[in-house]
Amino acid sequence: YIQRPIMNIFFMRDQMISTARGIVIGRMNSPQREAESHVAEFCLDKIGMPPIGHIDAEGAFLEGGDFLPFGKNAFIGRGLRTTQEAIDQLMDNDWIGCDTLIVVKDRWLEQEQMHLDTYFNVIDHDLVTLSENRYKATADSSQYLTADIYVREENSYRKVGENEDFVNYIENRLHVKVIPVSRPDELTYASNYLTVAPRRIMAVAGQSAKFQDALRENGVDVTWIPLSNLTKGYGAAHCMTQVLGRDEFTR
Image (tube, rainbow, N blue to C red; front, side, top):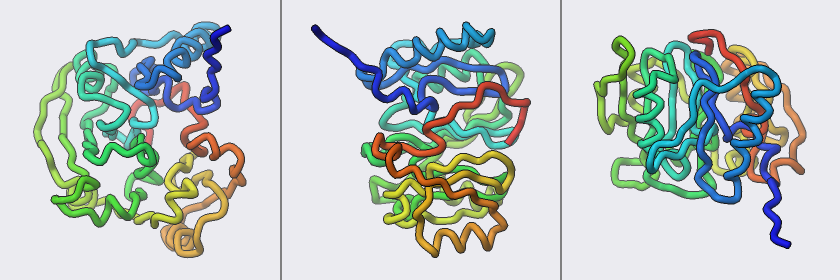
């Protein structure tokens, strides 16, 4: 007998993305998880929520942990698991529905930060977190992040910025405050929280006093959840949940 157990499906973030337009079925980058998107689509059809599209272009891979809506904008990570071909397909079909798409480009390509939501996350329209190694990285480091900026015009997107310093873009163009996440906190999934309302999050218990103080000082209401068994699967609250519907331009 040859078995292919679907052992990672308790992480429901990656099989699809939920945009202002609807649900788009992704394409998993690892063969071990290939069947998960088919299972997710089967369930969506059963509850009367068929997807608006599928990622299927040549060389196109999309995993949901790389997609973060941000008001009228959205972030999408391009790196270890999501490719430019998938991002292009999303834009070409106008499946995202945001005014500005910020493509965060990762050159490090390490499993420990395989998705955007493993090192970057959104708490509110003016507050985000970012792993310290990314926040402090200089242009000569593989951990340095750049961004390509696309704006929506009619039903298509036009690139208006390329290889912009990601941290500078967040702080000085979007005017968003960044809370750096230390390496020890990152290893206990501090970045992988679930935002349930502006400045209200569900996060993994056990983070440092410094990180807890930073959240408190910025008016963040945190529900700390013990997830030590589930995080052994390599993810936390954000990875384990999925959004089925969004109001247009919801943060």
